[in-house]
Image (cartoon, rainbow, N blue to C red; front, side):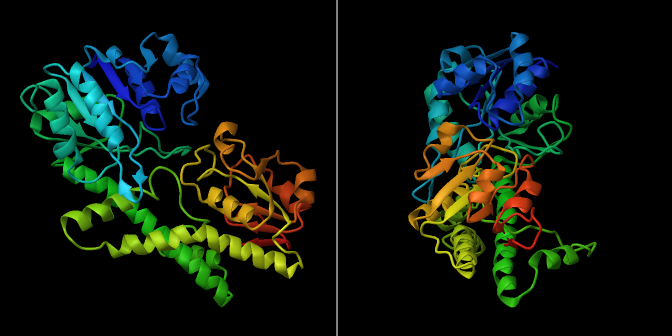
Length: 422
């Protein structure tokens, strides 16, 4: 079944893969974004999203059925609209202004029988209590009588080579049975498994719970790493040993903190909503935030201690950071703990160099006091310390092990007598 004209609002890590996949399923797709530079790049066949290669984007453009645009008038006559805009925290409070803006901009183009689906991560109640009235008031139409409204949270994991849009089960919901059926009908053509739930509030809570689960368990293992170091125990050996238990355990790896568009933000959406509606604190989330937000400072403390044992002060030392993105094999710097580590070291007077082959130089340029370099034997040998913060697969770890004076590895990728692990 061909849906006809599809509009995807937001052409980032979530919206672009969705737009390209809908084109591949046979739809005419308008990819809307307020970033005009992004739209120009997409129109030229240049993708900034690792999950969509330039070649795959070019094929979508060549069909004539994918049109990147910054003009909402291009949404005229749409059948399905998916909203995939960011939902950051502003001063610790959920910021859904991008959802509100998208709703007000798309509302004039709603028509009887169309479907609007929100994919942005948000707190329970947003679809029905915020998005719905905005769409109705600005369009003059009513749902469910005139148009369908659903919520289907994104489950994108950038850079994941195993799980992607096609084979990751897609959670779907609607404000009524017809809205649910319309939402299911859109996704089931290009997603292998669709998982319906009873209401948008359930789907909204489920998305926050998924990321809160991971956030809390990462905090647990990060705190365990701190304690294990003081106890003289190899925390990763303990984790590997525990993972041999075939039930009741799931392994998580320690690291320099959490980053990206989900873990540092989504649990706080849930915590904020619980405090606002229920009147109580979500203590697990508050504790996890405290632990994970403190990891960059702990990494720097360990690095300073490691330099001290080598009779070197951090002030004036040349530090080579490997990776500034929040996770391996992507260029996304949002909320990256590596950036926090870099800023702390600059503040301490270190001469900070960084290697980040995946991120755009213009994004890294906002990190004052950090010099971008290539990973070479000369750079490694010149560094008083090499710090592995993001374990991109294309880093030459053998070169680092051979030439480094001292390595502090937060990602468990290096071995050797000069290597100290988190």
